Length: 174
Length: 182
Image (cartoon, rainbow over all chains, first blue to last red; front, side, top):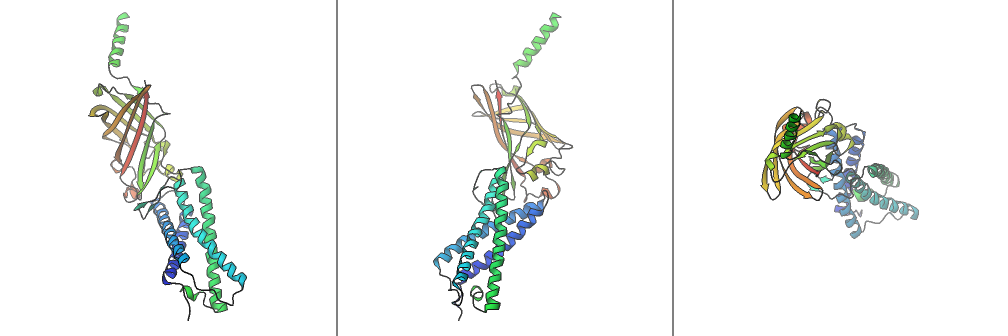
């Protein structure tokens, strides 16, 4: 009998994963588009909506995580392996907050408020500042790449547990 | 000779009888606008303009206002957009470098408020436009301030795919603040 994560934890995990993949793909696309077009304007806005959606889901997820103990890691794992898993999860959480917040900050620095789904205008996190905007965008990009690479490592580790160790680590999230 | 001089001075006096046109102080004056991009309000600014204002609150009907905005110096919120607004679909500054407003009909609306009606011209189209404003005098001059919505589509600002009002709303709020020293 596998002890799984709770259903809300599993749902939130996969929704956030999908959101991150889609937002990252949109971010790469808009970043490579030259000049200014209606298409680019729309994609940038979808990227922002997705990012804010991920931020909201991650906030709910963290609250859920803090109030619901996840199932234990397999007993045969080495203590250092458990430590690596633990710190990777912590860093993923930090980045899942930092990356969308950085994007929101960048939007504010550029003088464009974020209007979630075109409906809810979020407050600006800072005043317009073109000089800082470049640095913030760079940080946002570095953060996003780190998050995605870390998530790939996280997925690879889950697959290794499933196919090589043949334990329940992946199954408890399905 | 003397007569001509007398005539000229009378003519000058006659002109002075109207309010005297004076240029707005560019350091203190601003013409800004807010447009709505996918429901996101974005602020921009016309960084270069000349405004000549002759207005006496006691005799509004003798007033005269001429404003010329240099559209190439438009800050539309981002470097991409600043380049885009120069293009054919937007201001087409290559063919139409300036937007002008020239008004000589003024109406008092009470409480320090007035309206100016005149010809607004941008991108080759000229039409009547009424602009509300307030006058606030201080020790050294007067502030002329106002804010009004302008239909961008009425002047074909944003054509082709950009005529989509879901992407960029039709109403652009123009906010001006002009200072004329005494």
